[in-house]
Length: 130
Image (cartoon, rainbow, N blue to C red; front, side):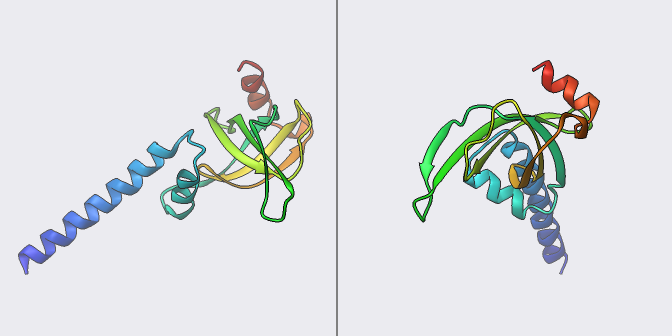
């Protein structure tokens, strides 16, 4: 019985360490695997970040033949923490426009264009300095 309890505690400890480590390993990674891991990891929180649009890094075709644009932009949250996000859009985004992006780790749940007034001043300053 004692060995079973110790074994369960070890398995739980390794599982928690793996979940914590996965969040650190996926930061700034734009891979599909990173997005999927962050999406299912209960320790990765949802957050809102802001970024400025740039030129698409890739243009491809979707399953129905539509154009798909891939973007990689530097984002900043209201606490001033910066990270890189990769996401796709079904249209070419206008350059130098502010985006409000809802994420769970590297997984982009949604994004929308916002006015400069809708972006926190500290975020605007940090984005301007980068």
